[in-house]
Structures are given as structure tokens and as C-alpha cells.
Image (cartoon, rainbow, N blue to C red; front, top):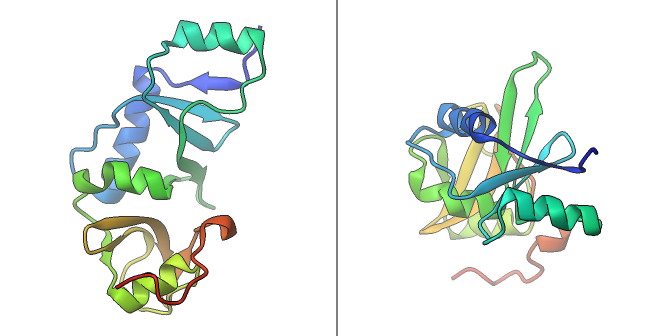
Length: 164
């Protein structure tokens, strides 16, 4: 029987943690079970069900996902794997990350949460963890001229004066 969900084993989880350490530094340890939906989307499950119970449930009904959306894994044009943390993924791991953190002031945080790209030269390329004061706000992708924004339209702030 084939399953739609792929629960990562210990070695597969370590590959993800290793990629995160390479991208963001720190001694990253992911607290929970990782589950893949399709080839790219990774979910973090910290509930009380074990793998066997999830499989039994999946035999009984269609399961769209288990846990919360944590990250997306993909390959660049050169075949190198990268991980982009979701907003929740950045919040869960933020205090473990030591590199590639971009600090936002109030004005930039406002623009970021409204879904805008930031036209800033950071001197870096690749994924950056976006941080405003003590809050982690997801991951952006830095190029020479800007930081690309991945906040879904449904999660963007509408108000122009939410951050104080």
C-alpha cells in the first residue's frame, strides 16, 4: 500500500537539520516528527500520535496534512538543496539560528508583513531569517538588490499601522 504522507525517518530528519545548519548556523534540533506532503512541503507534528497510529488513520480516511506547515525544500538550478522556513518554522527555530538573520526596523517590518519585497542591498545571497525585535517573521530570499517576500497573500497585513 502506498501512502500520500511520508514520515521522515531519523536519517532523513538529520539531512533536513544539516541543511538548516548550513544555511542558518547554530545547533539546530527540530522538536518533533517531520512529515512530507508531495516532494517539497514539510510539516512539523508534535502531537501524541505515533507513526503507526497516523498510518492507521490514513488507511481509514484521507489525510491532507499532519501538523503545521514548517518548511519547503527544493533544489536550485545547480542541483543544490535549500530550505525555506515558513513563518511558524522561523518562530520555532529562530532562537537556535545564529547566521543569516536580517533585523527589520518598524518601517521595514510593516512593509514585510504587508507582503512587499524590500529593496535593500544586504551584501548576501540566499535565504535570510527575517526578525523584528523579538519576533521572527519568516524567510526572505536575498539577491544583490532586494529581499524577496514569501508571505502568502492570505496572511499579509492589510492595516498600515499595525506595528508600533
